[in-house]
Image (tube, rainbow, N blue to C red; front, top):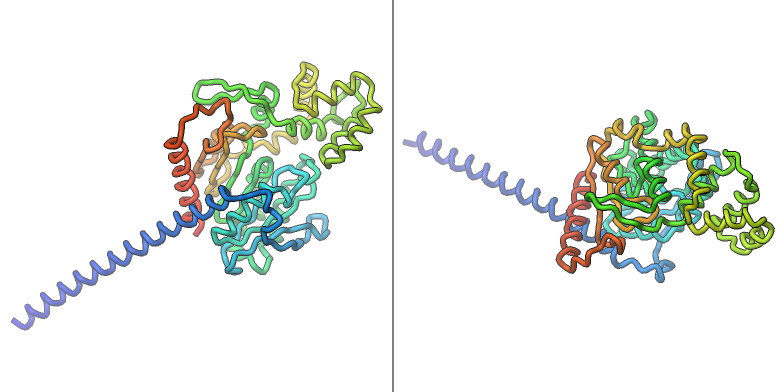
Length: 383
């Protein structure tokens, strides 16, 4: 009888212990799940509440890293309250504002508020809007340099690439030097998939989405960047050197110098420049762009993910805003379809007028929930 009692008691105790373990596991699971969603909500709240007028009130620290050219290169850091927090490196797109771009600061501050140390390195060529193979080497070098930073755990770092910089980052992560100490994941924001299809958007202003074609005016920066980088590579009757100099001044916001150079141009060059600066696609511009594509085919294929995205074996989160007038959001759908282990979000919270159908508050709530779920999965994967 005593043996039966001991056995029965042991069974009940074992069963009770199993229930307790299962309960604890469930509590831990739901607590973790809730923490990811809370982090996602904090991040999105930081984006929504960002006020560019109060940007000078945001706290950050300007540091340096040793650049590819062995020179001190600017590094802006947004430290979380816990300086041992997980780190995120945000690589820039092609912008003369570099780490001072309001969009970069907005993302960095929102991620810092979600509990991360965020690093914004400058890539000099991209600040000068130069599209060259060397940018990929800069990304690789910068990543390896920042892994040595005192507040970065080299085994626990995430990387983000914005716009043109997203393609550079994806290309960089195929390099064996990064594969030897890889990031936990890649987040691509507003990146193109094929330079050909992205340029087609600039040439036609058309986006095909769900079997419908929408006409949207492309951002004029696209034409400025293309002609600034490649005009000198082709034959034309225009004064290539002086026009490239003018475009450089425009990139650097030297408006007085731009006007001064304009005053020296002949009628044909002046008309040509106005078309570039306004993003107006004339038959001549289209013809010259086709020439530039052919002349720089090797470089453009090297920088175009449609040729190598299938080889990316990192977990890759792809996000694109439907209001992007620089790179059409359809590029990210192609990109996510090519990367084997990817997750895609196209956000319609802020739409083009041409696409928006005034769907109302319920649609916006649905889109907000999609974004919260996307970033909850992102933070969960990278924990």
